[in-house]
Image 1 (cartoon, rainbow, N blue to C red):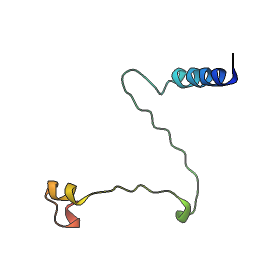
Image 2: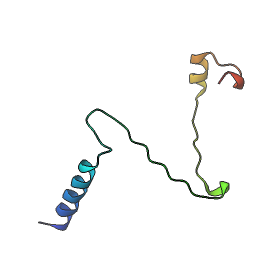
Image 3: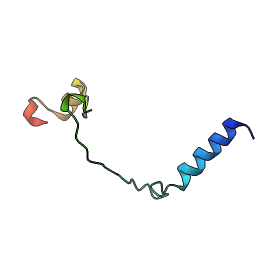
Image 4: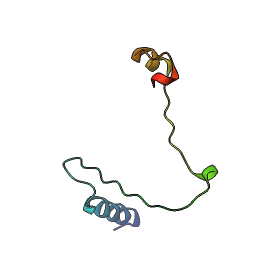
Length: 64
C-alpha cells in the first residue's frame, strides 16, 4: 500500500470514528480557555451588504 493511500485511509478512519460526527447532523462544540492578548486574538466579523440592509429595511445601525 502506498504512503498516500495509507495516510488517506488513516484519516478516514479517524474522521468517521469520531463520535462528534453523527447521522442526525448533531454538532458538538468544544471550547478551551486560555489567556491571550486582545491584539492577537481572532474575532468574528460579519459582512453585511447594502442589498441585505435594504432588503431588511434597516436604515440605522441601531436597527441591526
